[in-house]
Length: 508
Image (cartoon, rainbow, N blue to C red):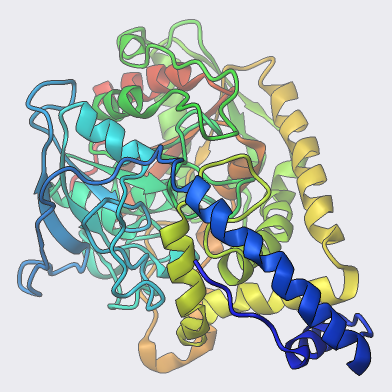
């Protein structure tokens, strides 16, 4: 790699931008020293090429772009049929991959114009695990623009429409992943969750989605929004398949720096244990968030009653700070996501990680096209830049510190109960915004569904959503179960017991 030698004008421009006060005379000296210093990047690039934990594609990776007729909900980005093994726990099962997760040889746009034309030359670690387990990668699913929205209308190709209501949101940002499983066009899917992006679309589409404990599933090779809350996990039609896919995905890879001491459990073995003896806390504040629909609250409380009849001890608990969970997330997310997207090439820095430099180089070369981002994405940038101008990064720091306090509040309650129970989203699927209504409607409908989901991304607890029947508009209602760190098996116990009753089955 070659970086051109700087001129003294380059030095003056940098000085002005950073407020360094370098003079005209000094700039010439700086230019000479910088020119010599940057020669180090060449040999370092040669050495770094030897670090190849992300496996390149083996053999052909053919794909097709579906026609509009074959993609009525705009959930597919590309279709494929990649199988590397005929045996394994996922043999014969199709897995669609969220289009923010690299699959070697398949194009990836991450819902945006920035990555148009980019084709990864590596598989993310979770994709490698699916293929090693005998699964078939059946394609890439559309997601929201750079995964910034909780709705399903910001993808550069147009909105992803809900399978159960054509004019309704699928939820986001793993929009297509949820829709394709709900439609039966894929057995399973891989989603990513930073503020609820697995659970919100799963709730809106009536499927099962798990945000695992932070670090349980390696994030290696996947573009980041912020390492404080990046998660990747399974989205499936039922609880058993969710546990199966997690059993394939979970466990350390020796690279993701958040995985120290991670030990997977027997998730499938927990499915038949029932709920007798489990203590479930119905989180009071989870039913009081803005926008809560009465029918949603009633459905979720009815699910709690079912679990009580099955033998669980169920009672109301309170964590008043839950009301501030989304606010805490926001002070982290606004700045963290802005820094990653605008300055850190979609990956982030400051971690002892493997960096997919081909993706980072693409993001750097095409980053100027961010001016075409939708208003809800630009809003993050505007808030972050304004706040940073006035208080620097102290707001981000306070957010992370506050998240640790919030985590302690949940942990205190989770000493006395095994699970927390609440609505996944306070409402059922929202109508898609009218494109002619301007930016106000687009901003208003992008994030109100994250009040209950976002807090557990920053406190790192496992959280699963499953359907618990229809709401007033005959759209799915999501029930969320939250467990102690690394206790996904307990979450699956309760979810499977409830699912087996048939009480929550969503029948459009």
